[in-house]
Image (cartoon, rainbow, N blue to C red; front, top):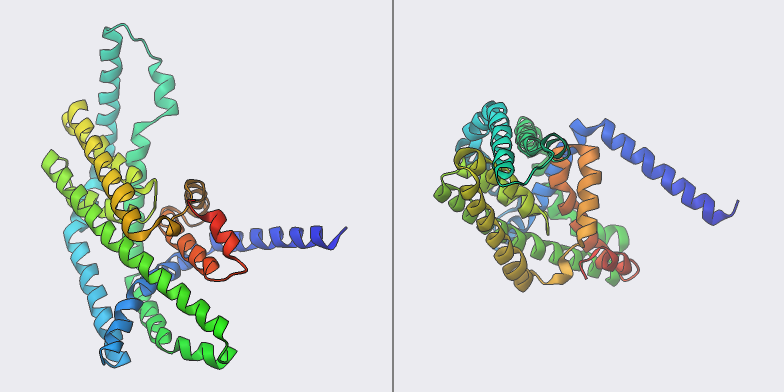
Length: 336
């Protein structure tokens, strides 16, 4: 057997072992990954405070206070909504099935006979509501590990302040190492800053849309739109499904169509006009890569893995792009 085939077999076997290990240790891996993502988001403002003369420990303390305040604020705003929506989920699913049954009866009165049982088995609208409930519950379960996540974030931020000096000590004054680190951090900071601002705008407008349309829990759907906007191409569409179905349950087809049209406009304006203008298409991921990362990480880490999949893949792409030898892999992952 040739060395190339042997190397490929060992690589595939190693990947399978790593995936199996990740899947077996979800309860530990998910909080660690969340801590890493939160720390990466918090690092730029921490470094900014340090450049303004704030001591490192005090800068970390200020950032951690802001994170705690945001966590408490979000929990206070949407905590009850998550609990109410979860408790009412079975009723929403039953009413949704009734609405769809009535829609089939209406179509039959116009002479359009459809196999109701077969269609509902293949496309179960209630499963989308259940997926939203499972996702929100998973986020709530993650918040129970908030102390562990916060503690890990603190240690990562304290370590980040000395990381550039450690690179110099480990690799010397190599220009390529310094350039790689600078390119990676600059690109990652640009991506996260712009993506976060656009996600805030997307969530705010989506919440106002749901509030104006009378859909229950508008703050909850605003938070969902904010989170899923980190998933390019299809995230906003996924976030639109629960409020559209809830609008259908509450008010019927007409109101659901208005909500769906509103989400389509939001996705078009923010995702296809504003974001490419400020971010550039070079930082995007191809639709296939987004879909595969959602499937794989969702299978390995559960619903929270779906949310972490694209940011982690985006970080890997930026790291590959910063190195001349691996830039071709980043190009293959990109949108263009």
